[in-house]
Image (cartoon, rainbow, N blue to C red; front, side):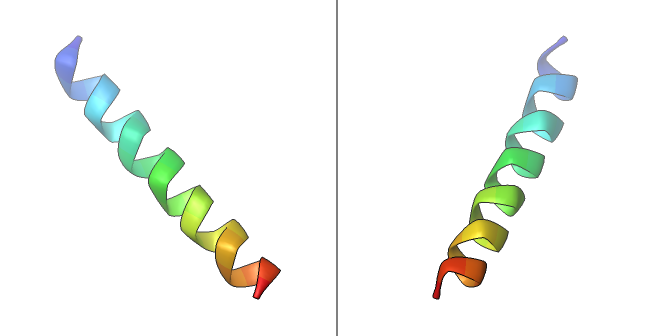
Length: 24
């Protein structure tokens, strides 16, 4: 259960990074 959570965190971080790049 801990592993899937880490993967989700990575996806969320990547998505956030993508949004910031789009904002700039």
